[in-house]
Image (cartoon, rainbow, N blue to C red):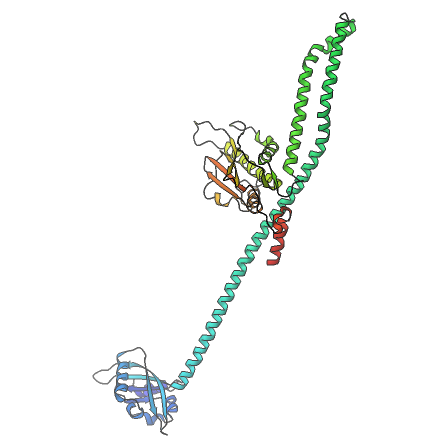
Length: 465
């Protein structure tokens, strides 16, 4: 490239450009340079940079040599002397465009920029960078706040959903309790009447039998019609079987009264508050209600319930809610045994008996532990941590809602300030342990009332959202 060719190219560029040798000789300069230095382009051509700058000559030459050795831009500063004896400080960016050869020295292309304008541009750039940094900071803060809000809304939604489920379950149990209590009351009255009159019936029948015996003694030779009727009704058998008949009636009415009592104990509509009760009575009432399921015929025989009760004091609790927990846990144990019965045992040679072991014990005289253990198929390690989550169930569609254990967990942990712990081993069984304090700590909040527990949770969620 010749200086003329350079000028032809540089003339259309808006940037101030100078083509110089490594010794400072100016070969060409475009019009923007002439305008910047307040002179004409042809006046610059042929001059040396050392003539029009006030920088020390050594520093200028060293800068040009640096540019000649490097094809990348080298930055420097040149202070020009203008024709009117004014001074102009320029920022220089230089690079070699034609290396030195035996025929010619190295050519250096210098781009000049007014330092004042460059500083102003730099200040504007810094201002823009600061504004951009602040904008990025504000956006990050907004994103963090939005993420936090979304997390809070998600947590509020999950809590509201769980609370809604608890409300539905509570309403269902309340309706069921009212229905059970009503039926128990309606059955209890006539059965009590029958049970009470059985005593008198036994006395009357005994009296009539004595009278018949007295007639037979007084009149041993009765008429043919009476003898024929005695043979027809088989009087000896009737007298002999009458005691068995009365005994079966007595046992039947006692059985009905026991069921009615269990239904009333289970519903506990008259004990919605926290009261001291016999835990074993609640467990037994639940077992009476589940008796039909416990007598389900399995390949291994009927389900055997083993009781290992400790000596427990009266426990302060919410009886109706706690009985609901017993119902859920024992029902799940029955389901596990039924499911396990349909699968072949790992060891076909060993006999398998379906068992549910219910044990209670006192812990440090401050709390009690109720354990409900089955010897079913057990739960794998991947499933066990999720069994208390709402809607989580391992049962087939239509056989499980995934709410029983979730509601039970809330009743134990929130209402009774206790723990519900699951321990399970595949092919050996599952144990669910309930630990609650003997005396409930008074809670000032309205959450201590089980009938308002769900209502308050919903109101809190509505306020948060």
